[in-house]
Image (tube, rainbow over all chains, first blue to last red; front, side):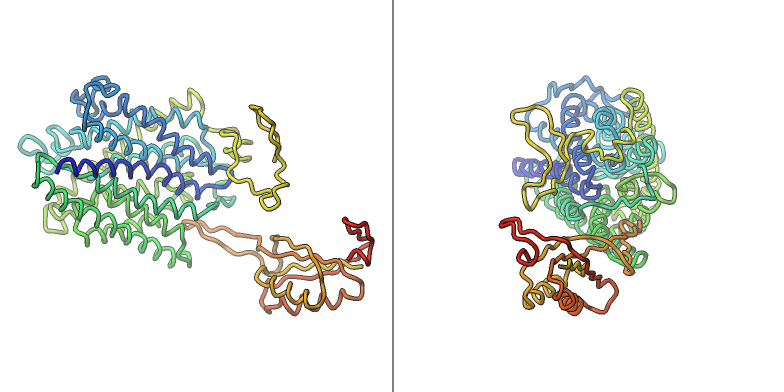
Length: 444
Length: 112
């Protein structure tokens, strides 16, 4: 039985990696302007490159090492480079690695068109070290935001040898979505608005890519949520039965919450804007998936539908806040991931079948969930601010004004996404190949 | 010789081409263009942000014809491309000094 379930974990880890490369790259890339789509996609691909290495070097050790430091993180050197780690544990390392990758990549939506690529490459490893690994340790590694003794929940409602009511974050409402959402907000504020924000049209250049990306994200999310079950001490057939019960519920909740969020988002658009849009449907998919992420094991399917509708409606309204408050969270990391993550995390206190007030339980779980969400917001904000200021001091954050207007793809990557000049005749490209050369011609 | 230029709705292009072919027009230059007139543009909304899209996609047809055919061809285009709704486009006629067929070097009437 254990072998069969480990095979599912291999598939899950692979599905979660698909969420970053290519799903998120497509989702964000389609929403970018055509002059910056490659940079947007490169932020996802390079996050995979950098975080994958860092996770093996010290990420695993900081998250799941045994030498805890003040319940905030574990000693990064204990299992540095996966020292003393072997066998099937590599599978868990791989699964967790893919979560760190996508969390960092999610932030890139807030900084479209204007962040230096060197700044991104420096930001990502520092940010996962100061924000992601500690929060993952706090929530999943038995740290401050788990039910551990002297943890936050224990400080609020103390129990016998730990918290009376343990916080719930099944697959990353706090660690992934609140964390990435807050980081996106702080980094966007440090970076400033794009030239022409709120005045020039900055409409998505290819919504078919965005729809494709949203669909692939949904598919990959089955690895994300359904792979996040924890067998505890069970073995053999008991483990198999628990796995079947648990994953059946989680798969269905993940799906129906997403369905409901699509409907919720589109109803808001139809009433407010007059049209139900494809971008709205794609955004509703992600809003629903974000909100159900922490809650997918705690709710009934009807509860998941209720959560999905609330998340779809709330996120559809929240994406307008950046124009009112004048911050340029370009692709709505705040409006979707922070708002969706907060709603999902807090809603567990209402809708959890085993502790929510909607089922007649005391408000203790609600209080614990809200406290955990607030702490995650604060931790991520401070960590991101520190990392952002360090990166700004070392390499600077923003590309030159002229380069931003011209398009970041050409400046940072020396490429253009689309070569449509002369696409029909083949003769009007305006560029020439310099045989065997290492430099680029000055064509169109 | 005259140059007849027409800017029409894209979905009317096939009808116009057929009618012109029936009349005896043997060739033309067609381009996809954008612009606006009284129709103006339209608005699009992305995640609640409303954008004015000023430019409307159109098809531009250019035909070089003999002086005597110009009025008939204008008539055919207007009749075929008309929907009666705003945004049907425009047709105009201008004078041409010389036409040369690149393949043979023929000039003017025999080049048309």
